Length: 89
Image 1 (cartoon, helix red, strand yellow):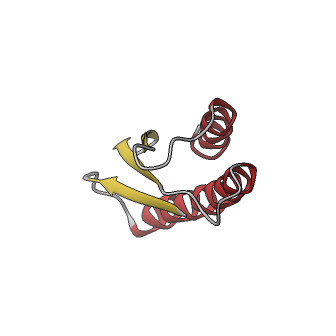
Image 2 (tube, helix red, strand yellow):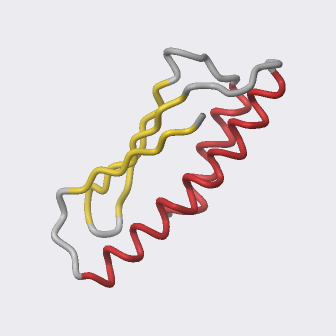
């Protein structure tokens, strides 16, 4: 299971908000696929991982991964990092 939470305290225009929302949605969809693959590798139905994406400036984003409930592999962590950089940088 993937749970991507988006946090932003940046004032944006509606167009900028829409771009941010689209990025978060694209990232969330990719994370779901990565974690489905991870769950299958662990012979589980799903894994519980929570990801927080923070908007630091109108064009800068950061993320944190909380995999304390279900530890994910280093390859899944790398895939998440790669996808984040593709979507948000």
